[in-house]
Length: 409
Image 1 (cartoon, rainbow, N blue to C red):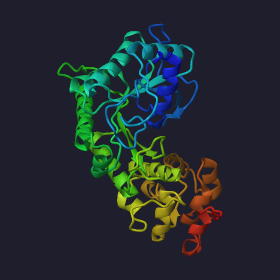
Image 2: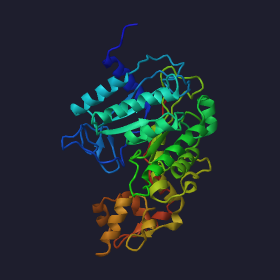
Image 3: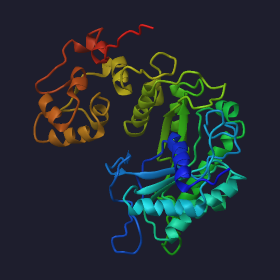
């Protein structure tokens, strides 16, 4: 077998990494090399592939260290039994690629994951050596490192001291699904690994008796990813699992990745992929749980089946089922009530609260602030608007649903 060039490896291992969806950098430490004492920055901008919640756009070199893997997870294209072309980077090759791409302003950081080779500790050690090598050479860009759940705590600690974010994929929302589709993985061990990362981070954040901290451990926190649609889990299962992990492990983000048919797919997977809109609705619901004080039961119990409404967003769906709580007076309602109005985001609500101190607001004022008046109109009263009988219309939902052409075949 001819030796691969680094370009050939890059083509294989960057393509293999496209199924990982974790690319946000929110919460990373601010570092730069403008004083000439290093290379890279976590605060600049360049070629954009992902947006952080604070509006910064970042581009990451997203690769696997290798797509060889000893595990045989049914949903993974890199599983042991998959008939895909294999490649493996050396530690020095990844360091060289990252530095060269950074110097050319192709990237602003590195996202590194890997298949499991030899053992979890061996794989983790190689990945940590890459990031430690970059830091030793003065690389100050953002680094997101996928960690191996079974790796030793010492390696996880070294990873957290050199990477901005650590992530451990829970993969599927239910333990039974993990056991069926990824029998070599242990859901309990994955959760224990998440717990250890949280404890290590809290330990490093705690000042010592001298008032000094031990150092920065994964300053951008940890995240995880769930595949949606590879099993028969409902949206309530998915969001319930996410909700528990946010609370138990202090996760920054849970990423939802709609299952997509992969080449050489396992026979145990569904033949049809779920609609991508399901992934979008899950992200919207996730946002409501974290920032709008909605309860899980309020969002997913529309028809008793535990699924989100794909035709309209979760907040609008809730409002239509709870019409008795509306209309809301925009000029008097408290913040928590305004946050439940469809078309109002947290920024819009803050602007409304600030602006109404100067006088009563009308619909046009809300429109100028950025509110989606079309969505809010049936649910609010303002100085120049009252929804009258709109809320009682049986066909109110139809106003928000886009008509679809029927399938002919």
